[in-house]
Image (cartoon, rainbow, N blue to C red; front, side, top):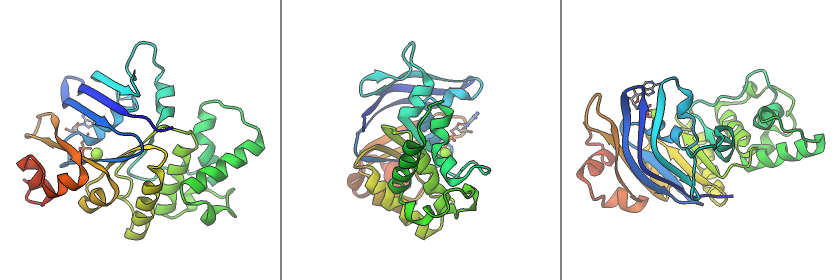
Length: 259
Ligand SMILES: Nc1ncnc2c1ncn2[C@@H]1O[C@H](COP(=O)(O)OP(=O)(O)OP(=O)(O)O)[C@@H](O)[C@H]1O
Ligand SMILES: [Mg+2]
Protein backbone atom coordinates (compact mmCIF):
# COMPACT_ATOMS: atom_id res chain seq x y z
CA UNK A 1 0.00 0.00 0.00
CA UNK A 2 2.89 2.29 0.71
CA UNK A 3 4.82 3.88 -2.14
CA UNK A 4 8.00 5.90 -2.65
CA UNK A 5 7.82 9.44 -4.01
CA UNK A 6 10.70 10.91 -5.95
CA UNK A 7 10.77 14.39 -7.39
CA UNK A 8 13.45 15.66 -9.74
CA UNK A 9 14.12 19.36 -10.34
CA UNK A 10 10.56 20.27 -9.52
CA UNK A 11 9.64 23.90 -10.15
CA UNK A 12 6.26 25.17 -9.06
CA UNK A 13 4.60 28.29 -10.43
CA UNK A 14 1.65 30.57 -9.76
CA UNK A 15 1.40 32.27 -13.15
CA UNK A 16 4.86 33.76 -13.76
CA UNK A 17 5.84 33.60 -10.10
CA UNK A 18 8.10 30.67 -9.31
CA UNK A 19 7.19 29.76 -5.73
CA UNK A 20 9.39 26.66 -5.44
CA UNK A 21 12.67 26.01 -7.26
CA UNK A 22 14.42 22.79 -8.28
CA UNK A 23 13.31 20.42 -5.55
CA UNK A 24 14.86 16.98 -5.81
CA UNK A 25 13.86 14.70 -2.98
CA UNK A 26 13.04 11.06 -2.25
CA UNK A 27 10.26 10.36 0.23
CA UNK A 28 10.50 6.84 1.60
CA UNK A 29 7.53 4.52 2.10
CA UNK A 30 6.47 3.35 5.58
CA UNK A 31 8.09 6.38 7.12
CA UNK A 32 7.19 9.90 8.14
CA UNK A 33 8.86 12.81 6.38
CA UNK A 34 8.48 16.26 7.94
CA UNK A 35 8.66 19.49 5.92
CA UNK A 36 9.82 22.43 8.00
CA UNK A 37 10.75 26.00 7.17
CA UNK A 38 9.61 29.59 7.57
CA UNK A 39 6.23 30.87 6.43
CA UNK A 40 6.05 31.45 2.68
CA UNK A 41 8.93 29.14 1.75
CA UNK A 42 6.61 26.93 -0.30
CA UNK A 43 5.97 23.91 1.93
CA UNK A 44 2.23 23.80 1.18
CA UNK A 45 2.80 24.62 -2.48
CA UNK A 46 5.28 21.79 -2.87
CA UNK A 47 3.08 19.40 -0.90
CA UNK A 48 0.12 20.05 -3.21
CA UNK A 49 2.18 19.11 -6.25
CA UNK A 50 2.52 15.59 -4.84
CA UNK A 51 -1.16 14.83 -5.49
CA UNK A 52 -1.82 17.26 -8.34
CA UNK A 53 -3.85 19.60 -6.19
CA UNK A 54 -1.64 22.53 -7.17
CA UNK A 55 -2.94 22.69 -10.72
CA UNK A 56 -6.54 23.31 -9.63
CA UNK A 57 -5.47 26.92 -8.89
CA UNK A 58 -5.98 29.05 -12.05
CA UNK A 59 -2.64 29.87 -13.72
CA UNK A 60 -0.72 27.42 -11.55
CA UNK A 61 1.58 24.87 -13.10
CA UNK A 62 4.43 22.49 -12.38
CA UNK A 63 7.64 21.71 -14.25
CA UNK A 64 9.61 18.56 -13.55
CA UNK A 65 8.80 15.07 -12.45
CA UNK A 66 7.01 13.49 -9.55
CA UNK A 67 7.37 9.71 -9.51
CA UNK A 68 5.16 7.47 -7.40
CA UNK A 69 6.96 4.10 -7.34
CA UNK A 70 8.43 5.07 -10.69
CA UNK A 71 5.23 6.31 -12.36
CA UNK A 72 5.34 9.98 -13.38
CA UNK A 73 2.22 11.58 -11.88
CA UNK A 74 2.49 14.32 -14.52
CA UNK A 75 2.92 11.94 -17.44
CA UNK A 76 0.60 12.10 -20.44
CA UNK A 77 -2.75 10.43 -19.87
CA UNK A 78 -2.44 10.27 -16.08
CA UNK A 79 -5.82 10.99 -14.49
CA UNK A 80 -5.44 13.55 -11.67
CA UNK A 81 -8.52 12.15 -9.94
CA UNK A 82 -6.84 8.76 -9.67
CA UNK A 83 -3.68 10.44 -8.38
CA UNK A 84 -5.67 12.17 -5.62
CA UNK A 85 -7.20 8.84 -4.66
CA UNK A 86 -3.73 7.29 -4.33
CA UNK A 87 -2.26 10.30 -2.55
CA UNK A 88 -4.66 11.50 0.12
CA UNK A 89 -4.54 14.86 1.84
CA UNK A 90 -5.45 16.23 5.27
CA UNK A 91 -5.57 20.00 5.71
CA UNK A 92 -4.60 22.43 8.42
CA UNK A 93 -8.16 23.13 9.55
CA UNK A 94 -10.36 20.10 10.05
CA UNK A 95 -12.86 20.38 7.20
CA UNK A 96 -15.61 17.79 7.62
CA UNK A 97 -18.64 18.44 5.44
CA UNK A 98 -20.86 20.21 7.99
CA UNK A 99 -24.24 18.97 6.81
CA UNK A 100 -23.10 15.36 6.51
CA UNK A 101 -23.21 12.81 9.30
CA UNK A 102 -20.03 11.25 10.67
CA UNK A 103 -20.70 8.17 8.57
CA UNK A 104 -21.37 10.16 5.39
CA UNK A 105 -18.18 12.13 5.96
CA UNK A 106 -16.12 8.93 6.03
CA UNK A 107 -17.80 7.77 2.81
CA UNK A 108 -17.65 11.17 1.08
CA UNK A 109 -14.55 10.42 -1.00
CA UNK A 110 -15.90 7.07 -2.13
CA UNK A 111 -19.20 8.68 -3.15
CA UNK A 112 -17.43 11.47 -5.03
CA UNK A 113 -15.69 8.80 -7.02
CA UNK A 114 -19.11 7.35 -7.89
CA UNK A 115 -18.31 4.01 -6.38
CA UNK A 116 -21.40 1.93 -5.68
CA UNK A 117 -21.01 -0.12 -2.56
CA UNK A 118 -23.44 -2.46 -0.77
CA UNK A 119 -24.59 -1.18 2.62
CA UNK A 120 -22.76 -3.89 4.59
CA UNK A 121 -19.51 -3.02 2.85
CA UNK A 122 -20.12 0.66 3.58
CA UNK A 123 -20.63 -0.08 7.26
CA UNK A 124 -17.48 -2.19 7.37
CA UNK A 125 -15.47 0.52 5.63
CA UNK A 126 -16.80 3.19 8.01
CA UNK A 127 -15.79 1.11 11.00
CA UNK A 128 -12.34 0.15 9.71
CA UNK A 129 -11.57 3.73 8.65
CA UNK A 130 -12.70 5.18 11.99
CA UNK A 131 -10.72 2.51 13.84
CA UNK A 132 -7.71 3.34 11.65
CA UNK A 133 -8.06 6.98 12.62
CA UNK A 134 -8.42 6.05 16.29
CA UNK A 135 -11.89 7.57 16.50
CA UNK A 136 -14.24 4.57 16.41
CA UNK A 137 -14.78 4.16 20.16
CA UNK A 138 -15.65 7.84 20.54
CA UNK A 139 -18.22 7.98 17.76
CA UNK A 140 -19.60 4.48 17.23
CA UNK A 141 -22.90 5.36 18.92
CA UNK A 142 -23.47 8.56 16.98
CA UNK A 143 -22.53 7.77 13.42
CA UNK A 144 -25.69 9.42 12.09
CA UNK A 145 -25.03 12.76 13.84
CA UNK A 146 -23.32 15.65 12.03
CA UNK A 147 -19.52 15.58 11.79
CA UNK A 148 -19.50 19.23 12.75
CA UNK A 149 -20.67 18.23 16.25
CA UNK A 150 -17.28 16.72 17.08
CA UNK A 151 -14.42 18.47 18.87
CA UNK A 152 -11.61 19.93 16.76
CA UNK A 153 -9.32 16.98 17.44
CA UNK A 154 -12.09 14.51 16.67
CA UNK A 155 -12.92 16.40 13.46
CA UNK A 156 -9.29 16.18 12.38
CA UNK A 157 -9.31 12.43 13.02
CA UNK A 158 -12.58 12.24 11.06
CA UNK A 159 -10.80 13.90 8.13
CA UNK A 160 -7.99 11.36 8.48
CA UNK A 161 -10.64 8.57 8.47
CA UNK A 162 -12.12 10.10 5.30
CA UNK A 163 -8.66 10.02 3.69
CA UNK A 164 -7.93 6.46 4.85
CA UNK A 165 -11.30 5.23 3.51
CA UNK A 166 -9.95 5.78 0.00
CA UNK A 167 -7.11 3.29 0.66
CA UNK A 168 -4.43 5.75 -0.35
CA UNK A 169 -0.77 4.86 -0.71
CA UNK A 170 0.45 8.19 0.56
CA UNK A 171 -1.00 10.57 3.13
CA UNK A 172 -0.08 14.25 2.93
CA UNK A 173 -0.80 16.33 6.02
CA UNK A 174 -0.47 20.10 5.97
CA UNK A 175 -0.10 21.34 9.56
CA UNK A 176 -2.75 18.89 10.77
CA UNK A 177 -2.37 19.89 14.42
CA UNK A 178 -2.07 23.65 14.20
CA UNK A 179 -5.73 24.17 15.20
CA UNK A 180 -5.62 21.57 17.98
CA UNK A 181 -5.00 21.53 21.73
CA UNK A 182 -1.99 19.61 23.11
CA UNK A 183 -4.01 16.48 24.01
CA UNK A 184 -5.58 16.21 20.55
CA UNK A 185 -2.17 16.95 19.04
CA UNK A 186 -0.66 13.98 20.90
CA UNK A 187 -3.59 11.81 19.75
CA UNK A 188 -2.84 12.73 16.14
CA UNK A 189 0.89 12.15 16.64
CA UNK A 190 0.22 8.68 18.08
CA UNK A 191 -2.01 8.01 15.12
CA UNK A 192 0.70 9.12 12.66
CA UNK A 193 3.13 6.71 14.33
CA UNK A 194 0.61 3.89 13.71
CA UNK A 195 -0.27 4.96 10.20
CA UNK A 196 3.32 4.88 9.06
CA UNK A 197 3.26 1.09 9.32
CA UNK A 198 1.04 1.19 6.24
CA UNK A 199 1.44 4.51 4.48
CA UNK A 200 4.00 6.93 3.19
CA UNK A 201 3.40 10.02 5.28
CA UNK A 202 4.42 13.62 4.73
CA UNK A 203 3.64 16.17 7.40
CA UNK A 204 4.18 19.93 7.24
CA UNK A 205 4.69 21.41 10.67
CA UNK A 206 5.87 24.62 12.33
CA UNK A 207 6.33 22.73 15.56
CA UNK A 208 9.97 21.63 15.86
CA UNK A 209 9.20 19.27 18.74
CA UNK A 210 6.52 17.65 16.65
CA UNK A 211 8.86 17.18 13.70
CA UNK A 212 11.45 15.67 16.04
CA UNK A 213 8.85 13.40 17.68
CA UNK A 214 6.98 12.03 14.69
CA UNK A 215 9.31 12.04 11.71
CA UNK A 216 12.05 9.75 10.48
CA UNK A 217 13.28 12.22 7.87
CA UNK A 218 13.19 16.00 7.96
CA UNK A 219 13.36 18.33 4.99
CA UNK A 220 14.19 21.99 5.62
CA UNK A 221 12.93 24.53 3.09
CA UNK A 222 13.95 28.17 3.05
CA UNK A 223 13.51 31.34 1.07
CA UNK A 224 16.18 33.93 0.32
CA UNK A 225 13.81 36.90 0.53
CA UNK A 226 10.47 38.28 -0.59
CA UNK A 227 9.71 37.25 -4.14
CA UNK A 228 12.47 34.66 -4.21
CA UNK A 229 11.48 31.03 -4.72
CA UNK A 230 11.49 28.55 -1.86
CA UNK A 231 14.21 25.92 -2.00
CA UNK A 232 14.95 22.64 -0.33
CA UNK A 233 18.04 23.39 1.74
CA UNK A 234 18.72 20.11 3.45
CA UNK A 235 17.09 16.74 3.94
CA UNK A 236 18.24 13.89 6.14
CA UNK A 237 17.48 11.65 9.09
CA UNK A 238 15.54 13.67 11.67
CA UNK A 239 18.11 12.90 14.42
CA UNK A 240 20.86 14.33 12.29
CA UNK A 241 18.95 17.40 11.12
CA UNK A 242 18.14 18.28 14.73
CA UNK A 243 21.57 17.53 16.18
CA UNK A 244 24.18 18.09 13.50
CA UNK A 245 22.77 19.60 10.30
CA UNK A 246 25.20 20.25 7.46
CA UNK A 247 23.92 23.72 6.61
CA UNK A 248 24.14 26.76 8.89
CA UNK A 249 20.67 28.00 7.87
CA UNK A 250 19.16 24.71 9.05
CA UNK A 251 20.92 25.04 12.38
CA UNK A 252 19.71 28.64 12.75
CA UNK A 253 16.13 27.68 11.96
CA UNK A 254 15.83 24.69 14.26
CA UNK A 255 17.49 26.51 17.13
CA UNK A 256 15.17 29.50 16.74
CA UNK A 257 17.88 31.95 15.66
CA UNK A 258 16.04 32.64 12.47
CA UNK A 259 15.50 35.93 10.63
N1 LIG B 1 -2.93 30.64 -4.66
C1 LIG B 1 -1.77 31.32 -4.72
N2 LIG B 1 -1.57 32.24 -5.70
C2 LIG B 1 -0.41 32.93 -5.77
N3 LIG B 1 0.63 32.78 -4.93
C3 LIG B 1 0.47 31.89 -3.94
C4 LIG B 1 -0.72 31.11 -3.78
N4 LIG B 1 -0.56 30.32 -2.70
C5 LIG B 1 0.66 30.58 -2.21
N5 LIG B 1 1.29 31.51 -2.96
C6 LIG B 1 2.65 32.06 -2.74
O1 LIG B 1 3.58 30.99 -2.85
C7 LIG B 1 4.62 31.14 -1.87
C8 LIG B 1 4.67 29.89 -1.02
O2 LIG B 1 3.46 29.80 -0.25
P1 LIG B 1 3.10 28.52 0.61
O3 LIG B 1 1.70 28.69 1.08
O4 LIG B 1 3.43 27.31 -0.16
O5 LIG B 1 4.13 28.66 1.82
P2 LIG B 1 4.24 27.81 3.17
O6 LIG B 1 5.67 27.43 3.31
O7 LIG B 1 3.22 26.73 3.17
O8 LIG B 1 3.88 28.90 4.28
P3 LIG B 1 3.10 28.73 5.70
O9 LIG B 1 4.11 28.12 6.61
O10 LIG B 1 2.77 30.12 6.08
O11 LIG B 1 1.89 27.87 5.46
C9 LIG B 1 4.28 32.41 -1.09
O12 LIG B 1 5.01 33.48 -1.65
C10 LIG B 1 2.80 32.58 -1.33
O13 LIG B 1 2.42 33.94 -1.24
MG1 LIG C 1 1.58 26.29 4.36
